[in-house]
Length: 158
Image (cartoon, rainbow, N blue to C red; front, top):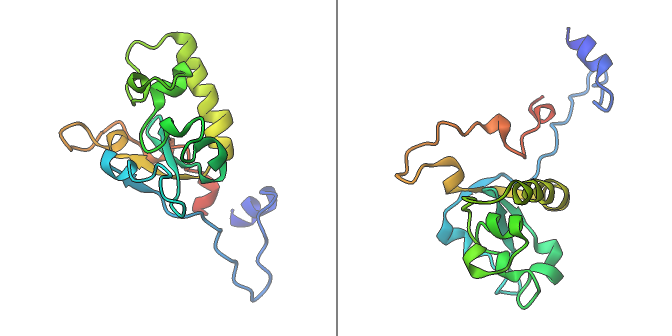
C-alpha cells in the first residue's frame, strides 16, 4: 500500500536503497497569543516582527513593513485581531476588533476573500488568538478542530 501511495504521489521524494528520507521542512511552530501578547507586535521597535490577526489567525506581516510598519498606512491593523476592520475595509478604531456581529453578507464575503487571497497567500501564519481556541471563561472551545485550521496540511503529517 505504501508503494502505491509513493507511486501516485508526485513530488514526494523516493527514498533510495539504504538512504533515510529527510523529514518534511516545516515553518516555525505556531503559538497561542493573548490580546496583551499580540499587542507587543505592532512594529514599534525596528528589530521586532509585525503581527496582525484576521479571523483569529495571527500572521507575520513584517515583510510588508512599508504597509504595516510604524507610520505606515495599515499600521492601525497590527498588534490585534482586526477582523471587522478588514471586512469593512476600515481603519476606524471602533472597527479594529475581532467582533463580526452585524456585518453584511458582502462584508463577510470580502473578509473571506482578503483572508485567503492576501493574508494566507502572502504572509506566514505564526499562531492563533487565544479567543479562537478558548471560550471567554478560559474553557476549551469544543468547536476548534486543528485539522480545520489554515496552516494544517495533511501532506505535512507524512
